[in-house]
Image (cartoon, rainbow, N blue to C red):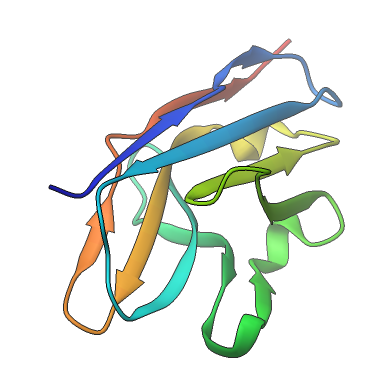
Length: 115
């Protein structure tokens, strides 16, 4: 069974950094996309960063220049390096892998940016 698990969230002050990790277990075929989404209270889930078909990397406008998505040394591991964090970055962050047949989501990890 495919399973994604996020870790690395927490409470940080504005301007601080966090590194999120998504660990995937199981087998997935025909991967089209892998990335990170987030959902803040009262708002819809939005794209943070993704590696799409062809290896194209996309970032949400609000995180460009501050966040970086990458694969770990171990395959099926995805990282999100978050720098210069702002209070508006506060949200639950979800790992996502999309395939030709299905989308897989983690349970999410809370990121809170507050002084």
